Figure (cartoon, rainbow, N blue to C red):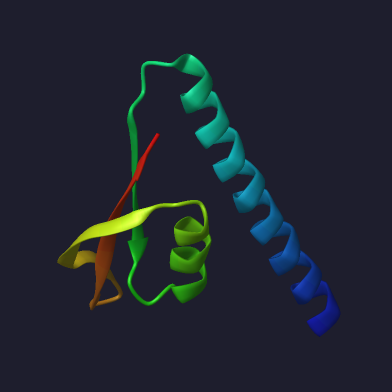
Length: 82
C-alpha cells in the first residue's frame, strides 16, 4: 500500500509541475499578462519551494486565510513578474 501511495503522490507532484509550467508558458505567449499571482499555505514547504523555483516571490502573508475543521491556516501571497 505504501508503494501505491508513493506512486500517487509522485503523479500528483508531476501533474502540478506540468500545470504550473503550462500556465507560465501560455501567459508569456499571450504577451499581455505581466504578472501571475498565487497563494500557498504557509505549512506547505514543498509547494513554496516549487513556486520559488519558478521565480515566484512572497509579497505578503495572510493570517487565518483558510479554515478547515476548526483549524486556521495562513497563506503566502506570491507573484511572478513575466
